[in-house]
Length: 148
Image (cartoon, rainbow, N blue to C red):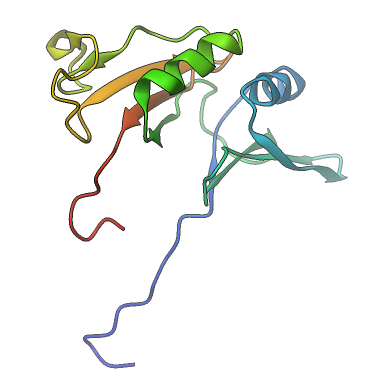
């Protein structure tokens, strides 16, 4: 391998900290995410893994997975249609914020409603899982160069 070669790396699994495994499992099932695994090979370990529809990356939670505090994770879900995603979340009885545009942070900079020009990377909503782990939903219709 030369100095100019770059090893391709794919993010496959992201661990999220939860306090109640079965409550979280029910929440992610309600989201419509695919249950990939729920295994407890020994008493100190239980791994529950879900994959959002169309995603190449999964989330795992359980017992013996992470020492992070429940509710401390933040992630971003990318969708092609923020309005359809918002409707689906509401239809699944997920408590989701209203849509906004502008920067996701700081919260004070958010402007109400989807981006009026439907700019890619410009519209958002968010929801929390039962522990307070935050999921920001971002509309991306055209990827920036190099992001495919």
